Image (cartoon, rainbow, N blue to C red; front, side, top):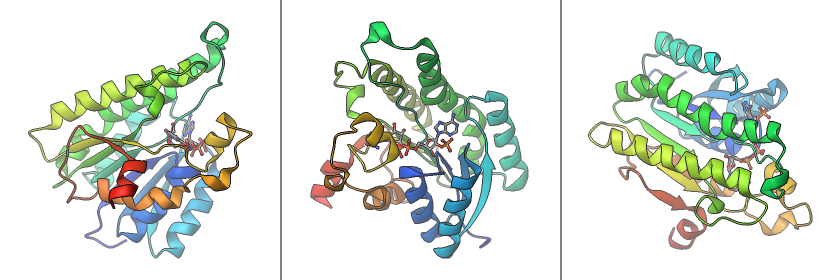
Length: 239
Ligand code: NAP
């Protein structure tokens, strides 16, 4: 690993948007810390990172294991003493259903993965981000966080809570070197989207690779905005 490389952590790096972002961040010179449960998926991402000329540290863990998130912060501190970019990308959809029929186990998972794990990661990683010359944090939202839609209630309320968490953290970081923002990718060609919209033709959707350059930009030292929600479709029109 290049000694001057920025250190970037991506959750949900085993497939989808997280994988594409990890490869693009590696190509842009970051050493990658890749988090997800599926070891095979992390290894495939690692292969792509290496092919892009980068390097990665694989951290297979379940984001519902909150003690492991505490240990992750401690390990990163021991190894590098800082974290420069944190892409809080991992998420679950749950199931699209009327709220009255929402499976309690899926509701618990939505809260644990989409909300609590991110709050616990902020707690664990905040000292490392503040130790960076330019700590950058990006959380993933969705249109339904602000525009509730029938049958999307579980996912929507989790993303609304995540937006609140993100914007609070951004306000708390305003006078530091840390910048904290939100990205709404819009419908993207991934496993999650196929689960939500099984009848949709995926070829009409942007790919994770299409939006990776925006993610790299929002996690770069040059990105000074704080507490903003960027919508990929709008950025695409102006870029
Ligand atoms: P995806 O293809 O389903 O990938 C989700 C990632 O999250 C996987 O790498 C998965 O890894 C990880 N993950 C899920 N549960 C986990 C857990 N308990 N512990 C550790 N990792 C876990 O999803 P995607 O479409 O790329 O979505 C990425 C983000 O964008 C999500 O936050 C999603 O809500 C948001 N988003 C997506 C769309 C879209 O159209 N795709 C639209 C709006 C917002 P493992 O299964 O290996 O653990």
